[in-house]
Length: 252
Image (cartoon, rainbow, N blue to C red):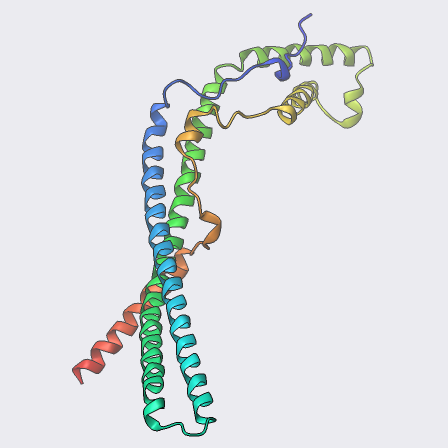
């Protein structure tokens, strides 16, 4: 009598040399979403790097101003110090503070731009995540359809197991009846146990999978939070109201 087929012994190839036709569209959409995220991420990183440079320059200018002020204080404690001796240091102090203020002003503008850039990255991240999920859903659907064509041996094994269960029941040796199962459900349970053991030990070759390699996630996703559609709508409305108030104040 035939025995149920053990899925552990079945080797399943999850990829084909060429990408499945039904995956072309979702992969193309994902690649576009990934490129948008990467561009937004790089722009945010560029602005952040520029902010750090401006901050460093401002801090250096402030140190120069502080040093000049300390030198003035030292001169004032010395006898015979004239205003002429102090003037160059005071001019140096004022120039350094002015320069630091300029750097801080540029920083403020950059920080506003960086905040907007981070919002764009977060929006792009949400889009990338949704497109990646669409690729996985399409891929899973395609694989499931392909797997159906290989299920006939399993159906045959389950059917024979069902007959075996019924034969045991006729002789009063069917333990599955104590669990309130039918011969068919008991046969399906046997196959499920085989499938579960096989699946638990199954190793998916991600690096060798053409689809997953084509849909590799971009770096930096964990550095930015996603923005929900509701939050995007609220931000858009808030900006529109702010722009309307500004225009109204200009017209008055």
